[in-house]
Image (cartoon, rainbow over the protein chains, first blue to last red):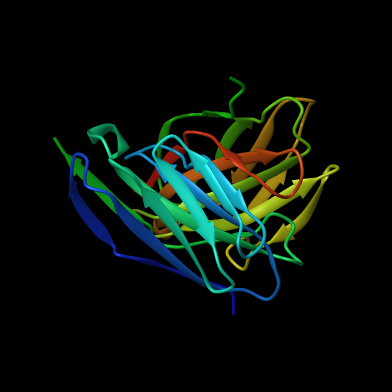
Length: 111
Length: 112
């Protein structure tokens, strides 16, 4: 069964304190791994797609990496506006748009 | 920037009533989806729609659910007879291919 597990569930950082979020996955043939940001009461906002092990993507203070079993979202020198829940999702090779989401990591960045 | 728009933002209904949630996907997207998120839980896939037919659906998407693209712009989710457990945030999404999905802001459904 396809599955996504994210850790930690919650993370509190001071502004400027870099850290990483983990996404472990099992899927029958990975078509893509996706990172989304979700603010309270809002829809997921697309951040990155990763397709194969070794791939990396960057956007501002965020960098996503992928191995055969997990993905990391590295946050460098975070700011309070980076506070949100970060969701990881995978799509299997046979999927027609069925993304399997993890429960997310709730990030709080204090000034 | 193009976005997926959803209406209503919040709907309160009585158990057993029919509800229609509406979505306007991004204009050049070909694939459309509905997901839901029960409060405090994961985002869950309901259904994907392409070329005017359902391409994939989950176990959640039973006979009380239906989707329709009644015209060239709208995409709707109908729940025929709502149950208490249907209370959730419903997200519409669209994509160019079956890859990167772009989500709307959601419609919060409260069933009393």
